[in-house]
Image (tube, rainbow, N blue to C red; front, side, top):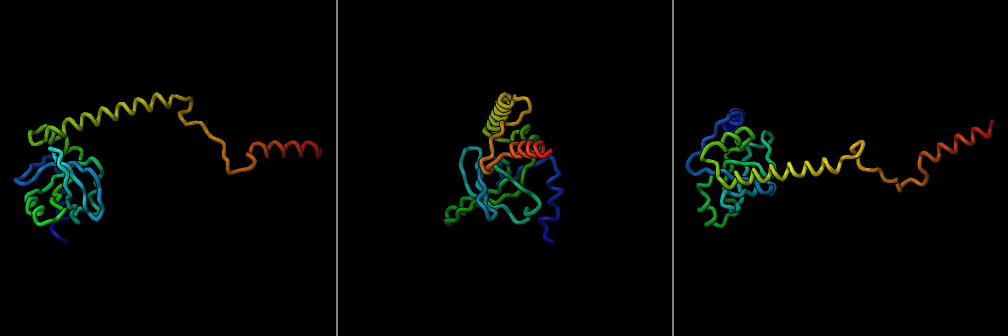
Length: 166
């Protein structure tokens, strides 16, 4: 087994993350497939990053996740014509993000983005609660147009025919 996966679980459980030279925190904007993701830095610049195979089947990311990206070879890659400019070195989880937000290493633009997202989700949850104030909380049922005769009508006709047979 290669050294990448050997200590991966230990690195995930670690709460304190320190950024080294050439590393920065970026937010995942889109998933491109084939271990390529699009990330956005604190300035709003978007670039493509490679999600290494050592994370495969052990770490998953989704839109809006934060990652630590190695950008030391970014300029050289862009000059050579490569579209993939960065390499993901670590995926940040909820506890790690909370710890980093308390440090000066966390970009200010991400702090405001996190507050806006929390406000939007709480507002949408309140709207959903107001809309779902029905008795049972379920949307009204519509008639099934695929059946010619509803089940209730068939049951009524069977009971009438059994009464007339007696």
